[in-house]
Length: 214
Ligand SMILES: O=C(CO)COP(=O)(O)O
Image (cartoon, rainbow, N blue to C red; front, side):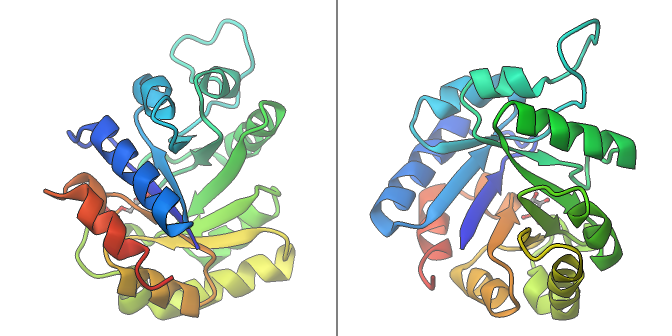
């Protein structure tokens, strides 16, 4: 299982989380990545943790004020990027463009989607992975795998029907090792989570728990 910790715009210390994630990944052998604000990518990457961007623009170099270029995040240590997160939705053409931009910059890609139908559409764009995150469960206390196991199973089936080389992750409300194990049982090969780590008093302890049942 891949554990991708999205720090969103939470007021946590990205270096504290990154250092803890690096240490837990090293000691457990579980793949863990941290996705900080774009401005924090370089210093998070310097900790040695696998570092992901939260978004990349479909644009290439040029007159695009405010863009976050795939090339720029890669140059600052990112190895992958989220695209179309529920809190940063893109038009279909721009999702396609962002996947292309990420591939040009050698970034791994996870395209997020709200439901299995969107997962099928996202899979057709050939990212490395898709992630189903029901918006109503994001930021809550109950994991998607417990609150709505069917949406994870349906997302896995929807992706497999289009391209079984694309991995399927799930997210929303994931905060424990039990949640990660439940996601794996439903066919997910990774989880996305945010508040469980970013809002924790002791992020290292939460990360230890997250890998405890893998
Ligand atoms: O949006 C998410 C990860 O990208 C999930 O957020 P929570 O873990 O806070 O529910």
